[in-house]
Length: 211
Image (cartoon, rainbow, N blue to C red; front, side, top):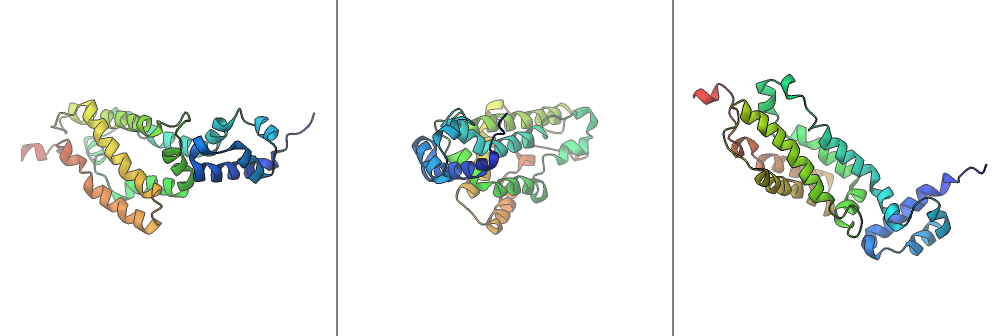
């Protein structure tokens, strides 16, 4: 049995990424991708169903990492958390936010493709869908904080979606607009000051409720 030649995979994906970055998915040409990778279209179809499948392969890693990032923060056993841990989860800090910016900066090219060049693919609504995932995670923490009497403000699902959409835009824009890492570090600090979740949900520790 012939062994598939995987040596062309890296240059095929590199060529596809460059073409998608330059023209976006809709205007990218599979023929050009093949020519620049020095392979035949037949070789592509042995590996992928078509152009969209190839695009998905290019952005697959960042999609999986982002989904893991939010799922690891939403699949929580609240019964194991103390009131102080629930309270602290709402305090956005530079240290807690920086890993997300590091992840996106490390994969900034494929992330930009996913967010800004995916029209016409299964990922064209990724930002909206990801905001929905994040909103769900925030809702779970909020419901627990409210149940324990730590959060005093009433928040609707729609309000969370609006605010998380704004937050996600603040996360995406520096990457899409190719800010330097030094600029992103400062931006991270600004975002942490700007999104005052403690004030938004009227969060209070137990002893503060009696002041």
